[in-house]
Length: 418
Ligand SMILES: *Cc1c(COP(=O)(O)O)cnc(C)c1O
Image (cartoon, rainbow, N blue to C red; front, side):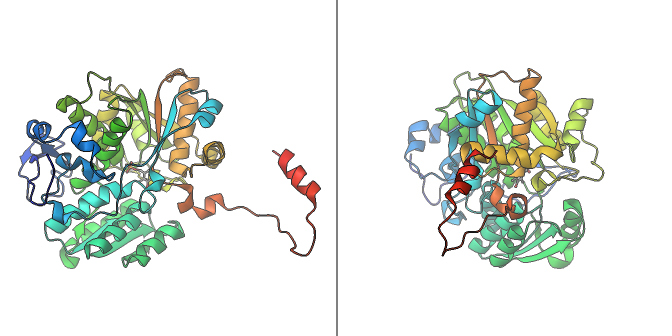
């Protein structure tokens, strides 16, 4: 079957994650009892409408999984061509860690340089369909830049609130896309409060992580793609840098849906690993203590800004997915993050951001504890690249004089230096 404008969505209803309350589709929702909401599909109808061959003929964007996404109408989709990030085999990095089947899914190649684009294309599409004209977001950086871009593409007004130490690139990309962007002398939860408080007066729609139901659906496509790229098999382990957790929650949802569609052929589910820095690891702490919810993390400090989320509204959803998958949560040393960034990029040429660098550290520690074994198939998510963090990668380059023959011995010395 070909999809066309006017093709209906397969959403059957929405469902409160905290207590299973059934909510109507095609109405605007935020939270239920202060907690996120799932989008549910008529998977029987999806399986009649879509198959693996049909999929292969479609363009390589996340909208190729149209039947598993909530857009009501093809013509309202707001897209920048996001999706189908490469799944790169990493033998050099794997070799240095002691893993013989390591892959990196490189989300730094998405339109605005992070996987946030997957969530924003769906959330902005739905907001537009609901007639929203003005959106606002608290952000650690990438979500704001991404929302600004998609809001521009949709012709919406965008307000972006970020901590004052957010990298310049995130500040400028939001402004460049026409967003009204502000620096706040606090953390992302302080920014979130401004967005919440302004809802009445400013009339904006709150785009905070998980406060509207559709970002998860976009993030879910990482799981759908991964399965498709591995020819409908799944890896043994997924290492995921976890802040708000949308990606981990979304991927786990994707695997359940594919399983229900019968597309996985009895594949074992991957063990999901939430990776955080020891400077901000509320999920790891709750996991270790066997708790259902996570306590807010005091004095959160990490250079991996995507991980600097002291309190996640979907904490129990992250913890459920980790536990249901037989996975775990790992905190790595904040001190070593830049070292792992360099290690990854030197080994593979992939621009590794500090968040994903933490996953390299997690691979190291899970291998040494025996939780991971050397030949397991491991996929590490590079959710954004080092390029967004010029300060973390800046280097002093030796200068040459154009009028003098270079000192060749200097180059030789450079080659032998560590
Ligand atoms: C947002 C972000 C994260 C955290 O993602 P969640 O799905 O919200 O946990 C990790 N890395 C980067 C680069 C990010 O932008």
